[in-house]
Length: 187
Image (cartoon, rainbow, N blue to C red; front, side):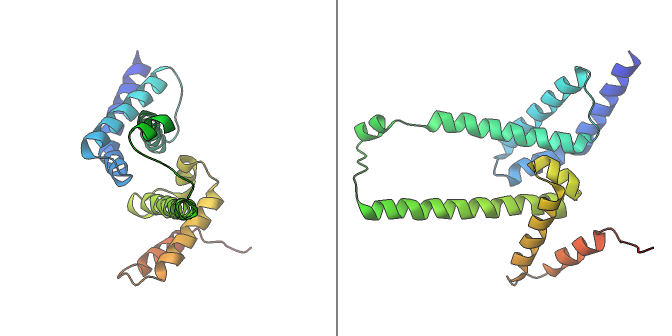
């Protein structure tokens, strides 16, 4: 009974501390405010079910953000399945794909643009988690499913790439990341 009370208090405190940040995180990922609120509720519901089943979470904040991200992915997959149309349905609606080489080239160009945009979105995501939310690199790594070294390299490259663009105050990111790095001592 006492453990249940402790869990309930920990969970309530986590909601008060992290719900706003998770909501902002969802909206930065492109969710509408109403959808972001739904994602937050679903993330906390799934986390409660996980914790109440007797499983332990060491870093609750990281876990909640990761669950929220999975909720958003689940919703995106659900919406994608809903949007998928068959070629027959498209042809009945008047769409004719044809065999034009320029159309093929245009599709390849669009695919390359989407891939490039996806890379930029990934960089943006880790930059926001690091410099806006203040997550440590190892927490970001567990959220995005990569090693801490990979995340650190991607952060460094993203800051370096952004430094080529003239944005006031951008140099502060590079200073902050190097200042927060642990100091190595030689014995």
